[in-house]
Each structure stands twice: as structure tokens, then as C-alpha cells.
Image (cartoon, rainbow, N blue to C red; front, side, top):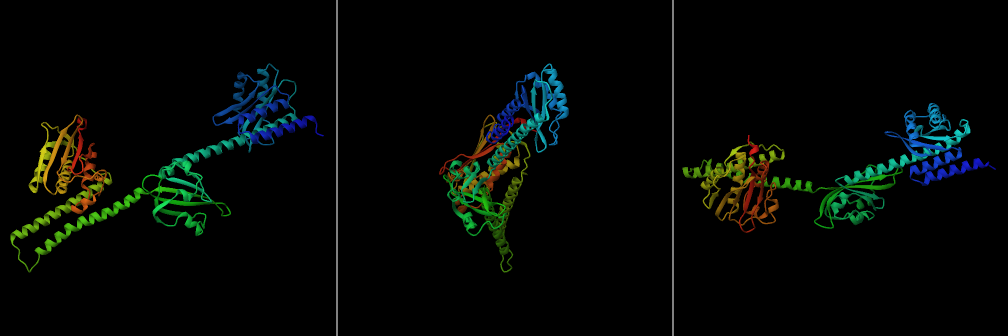
Length: 521
């Protein structure tokens, strides 16, 4: 039968082992280890100190004054980071500790320090003090080392647990911060995890996504390109560990229209090739879809707008060059006028396209100078009036309209586009009015006509590049760049442009420019 002391040692070690496996709070486990160490060695006091990133900290202590603990701290700084397992004590530390302990306790206490070793790293130190004569024996140190080993295991486990929790939180934060939607599926297609971006895309709370089947959440509305995940797996996907699957189409949502997305699925396989998870990245491709549509619109509009004047120019030139006909001067002049007009159209279109390209590249230059908007507007209106018989163009500006700092050529471009549109879209004739208003911080110019006006559904888009309403596309020519460039020029001056009219009451478009004397050069 084991002696009573050995039985107690065994029971204490078993108790510590259970505490390490059952208790997650490190300080609680260390406090129990320290209490047992003091009791088994008939000590009166003790402490356990742990190495931290900024130095050392006393994790737990028993029966020691704060003043004594402060005197211990300088000793901790000399503890080496590594310790050979066969060296059970820190000789230099213990020599210093003996002197410190006797001085602090007036010769009443003696002490011993043993390292807490985890993979040959000194993660902490265990101190025990007692008040009877005689040094700590080899058996005492062996017993204390057993408790120190248990404490080291507890510290190491706590560090691993803390690191694991940190990594889990970090990964979760990264996944939640991703702008694309994210799905983590189990092998049976149950959604194990999703991020807020996916919930926003689908308009569904995350709680209603997690735990549900993939096919219950990812519902394709139309235009699927490629096989769905379910169809691909029927065909044997994934056949290799690095296989991926891309599906593009429109997803149904709980509210609002369907959403164009592209989903990339990637498998996560075990070492023996068993499918563990499927990772799905859901990307909103609305802008890519819009870009494709814009490219198609650009090609269609430019092709149409170039084809008509080129065809007219070629036709008139071919006619004039016929050797079997003789044309009088009036016919030749009329034909040349048409050729010149169509060439001007081509020039305007090319200039608008170049300005649109410069705007996309951020190279739309603004050359500021003093501009008299009242006089500039009257000159432009008179030029249009000489070419236009079916409309009457009136200009109204208050007296002493302020001179502002602007690019005269660019503002001329804005006014010309607005007046040209007013003429074009009020083909029945009537009056075109240009009015100026003065406000404390800005001036406002409005161009209005007596045509059919702008439909409410078109108002949010008329300043977009290449946008033309269906009705306008059928009745009038144009590339849909005039208002787009007008907005760019106005905003480059620090102003804004907007629609101020109701459908059926004629169109009225206004823009503002700042009256900022500090910008004068």
C-alpha cells in the first residue's frame, strides 16, 4: 500500500489534471496549483508569475505583501527564455531569491523557484516559501516540479485556446467584412455559415439562411449560364481537389427585382478525397451587366449616328460627280450646304465622344476666367435664332447679373446642348425661354420649351451616358451624350444640373454655378 503522503500527492495531481481539462479560466487553475504546492511542501506563501509580451505579471499569489511582490519583479527580468528539461531549477534566480527572501522576512523565510516549461520555453515561474530551517530537498524540488509541469500544461493550453479564439474571431471578422456574399456549405448542402453581404444581397436575415439547404436559398430566376451546383455534383463534381464551378444568372430575392450574380464554388476535400465543405463566393455583377449593355448601346448609337451623315455625304458627292448630268449653281450650293451640315454633325459627334473619353479618363480640363453669362447666353441664342424659324428664343436676365469665374467654352457647350435639345424635342415650334436667377452663393440658368416634356420615368436617367428614352429614339437623332457632358461640365465647376418640369408641360432644365470670389485668379 502507498504511504499516505504519496497517496495525497497522487490525488492532488489527479485533481489538477481534471481542473486543467475542465476549467477554462487559467487564473483559477493556477490558484489551485499554487495552493496545493504550498500545502504539500508545508509552505507559508507562494506565487506564480507568467511571461507576457511586455514583461512579466504575477498571475496568482498567496500570503505575500505587495511590497515583497514589487521586490520580486526585478528578478523575473533575469529569467531565461529557454531551459533544459533536466535542469529542474534556476540556480542564479534561486541564489538571489534566497538572499531576498531572508532580507525581506528578517531570516524567517526561505524559498525556491522552478520554471514552468512548455516545449522547452519558460512560460512562467513557480515560487514557494516556507519558514523552517533547511534547504528544499531533492524530493521537495521533484514534487514541486510535478506541480510546475502541470501549471505549464495549463498555461500552454490556455495560450493555445486564446490563440484559437483569436484566429476564429479574426477569420469571422474578415469573412463578415468581405464585400462579396459568402456561403460555407456542408457536404449535404446545408448552409453552415454566411456573411452579412449575402444577407443584404438576398434581403433575408442571416438567421433565415444558416441551417437551410443551398437550393432553398439560392433560387435562380432566369438566364443561368452553366450548370447549377446540384447539376454539377450529379455529374461527379468535384473530380479534383482544385476544381471550381462558376454559375452566372439572376437570383430571386425576397423583395425587389432579381439580382444578377456570379457564384464561384470551390470544394474543400479531406486527405482521402472526401468532400467536407463547399465554399461559395457570390458576386453582384449588376455593374458588369450594365457595362456590357452600355458597350452594346455605344456601338449601336455610334454606328447609327455615323452611318446617316456618312451616307448623305457620300450620296450628294456621288451625285455631284456624275459626268452624265449638269447641275445648276443653286442645286450645287444646296448640295454643298447639306454636305457641310452633315460634316458639322460628324464633327460634333466626334467632339462629344472625345469629351466623353476625356471625362472617363479624368482629363476634362477647365480653364477659368471671368464670364459674363448674360452676354454669353444672348450671343448663343442669337446664333440659334438665325438658323431656326419655327421657334422663338427669348432670353431674360436680371440687371447687373454678376460676372462669375468659369470656362467660357465649356459653359457655351452646356448652353448650346440645352438649347439644341429644346429645339429638337419641341418639334412643333413654340417659345424657348432662357432665364437667369441670382442667389447669394450661386447663379441659376434655366432653359425651358413648350414640347411634350420629360416623362417621370426618364428623369433619373437623362444625364446618364448614351441614355435616350424609347420615344426620343424613334423621333429624333442623337447619341445621348449632350446632357451627360453638360452635367460633367457643370459639376466640374462646382455646380449641379437638374430637371425642373412636369410631364406634358414642356421640358425645363436648370443648372447652377457658384459665385465664389475666392476662386478668382
